[in-house]
Image 1 (cartoon, rainbow, N blue to C red):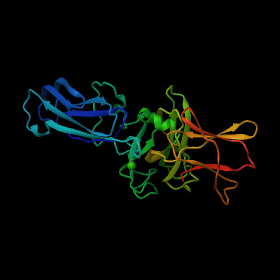
Image 2: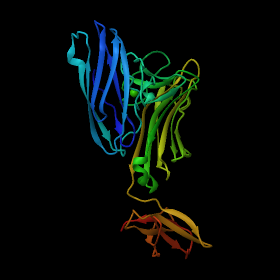
Image 3: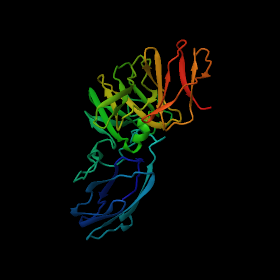
Image 4: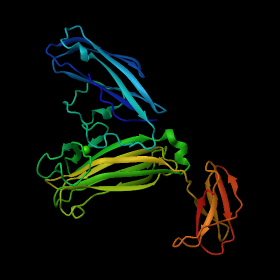
Amino acid sequence: MTDQPGPAIVGNPIPLSIIVTNQGPFEATKVLLTIKGSFGLQTNSWPLLNAGDCRYLVLSVNAESPTLLTNSAFLSSDSPDPVPEDNHVELVSSVNTIYGTNLVANPCAEFPWPVARPVAEWWWISASAFSPIPGWWVTSNLTVNSYGAGVGVPAADSPGPPYRGTNYFVGGSFLSTGGQYRDLWAVAAAVDSGGLRFEMSAYLGGARDMNGGASFGVEFFDALHRTLKSVWLGPVTAPDRTNVTALLLRSVGGYVPRGTRHLQFTIVTTRDWPDSSFADDLSFVLLPTESPTLEVASFATKGLLLAWPTNKTGYVIQRSPSLLPASWTTVQSQIIVVGDRFTAPIQDLENYGFYRLSKP
Ligand SMILES: [Ca+2]
């Protein structure tokens, strides 16, 4: 057994994937796997593993704060074992804060590991671990391939990510997809304050003059799984690439809609036979912003009602008649707390202008 920890995110199920392989030369009978740690005590047994057999096991745990999770896994068998040293492994996983962390699992297509796909004998929760691409639910043959694997695919020195690793995502069918969910309940208050930003980016591309295109998107869902917003990068077309086999950087940022509780990341590739489209180096990062978003509504017949969250204190309202050039002056207005909002009615509009919050 060996330890290959991946990133884990606060408030999201953390799968612990364990592959048990009998590396021979003998069959192993009455194999017992014991795991101690953050999962409590778990035992699993198999009556017989022939030489070369492997079994795959996934446990799932949740952590509500950044921490280190430690688990010890022990293997034993009734059969003689010429190499007993690899029958014990310490599994240490770092659970990261949700802010500033790339929330896309396996974002660079660098897994699966260089092992044969394990036999799924049984599982508990995280069936996605049996995806051909760890971390992703896939449809229609989305898979990974290596840079420089042949004609019609990116070479090691094709335009693309500066730190590209070995693999990229590639679709095997006319339309292939990969998806992931993330849970944002751990930061619901920050989401609902309206001040949570996101930055997302991806390298997307295709082959030669073929029109297959890859896209990377995020959907923001509320607690009832209703879509609040969708943001997509790509596709990068053949003219975008000047008919060169390449992956080009695309990026966008914005605000997380209030009420968001779940995210879904999606890769979509299309294939223009015989070549396909490619994606690599996907990123989605949440960033809390210091500055509140100023909300504007109409008030009375020709007034404005400005509002911002009450957890953002110490701001004054400023106004400028123009942005080019800007000339900000502080507006003297009554500020009233309504619910969880500071509100300021602006009734005496001399003329239209721009408003902002500023901290003196
Ligand atoms: Ca890669």
